[in-house]
Length: 230
Image (cartoon, rainbow, N blue to C red):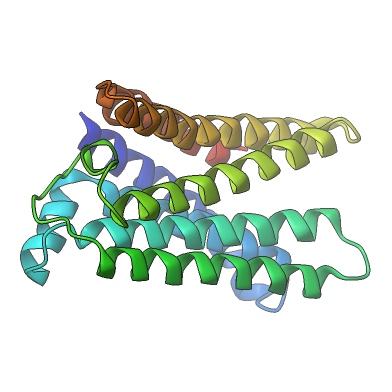
């Protein structure tokens, strides 16, 4: 079921990217359009990489157990950076480029942190769906998990607040689109929030892994659909 949700979400997001691609080709220097296409493209890539069959294929081809995890987390972090850049262009102002560069640099540091903690940690047992909770108490791997989840939750929260705040200031189709994007981003925040709750439960000796394997993917899939429609 998780695989179906992932691949359908990926298809929906890349369909949205295909719809926007002609505009990007005509206005390739428009940073706003570039940010929108980056958000759609990277979000779809995250779903594709996170599907259990893809996870298994990456691990098998690389010969490194769970290598798919940091690759997926890096893609999620790239999506977070693109989301923040999009929000910066929404807001506008005299320092748009500088602020966008700062967000990009910040999330680049997160990607480096993910790579470093995975290299320092030890995750020999392949986990295709519940790596977050299975390794929640493993040194360095736990830090990698928390790092990407906090980065994702931050980006989703900022996007939600910005979209819904802007929606209150406009009317018509733009308001409807922004409301849907805000609702989709809120569902995205639910993805990382429920995973963090499951990880926290693991730290206290409880097994709430179902939150990360069932609730989180459903929240992410619904969020993807709402964002594409928006």
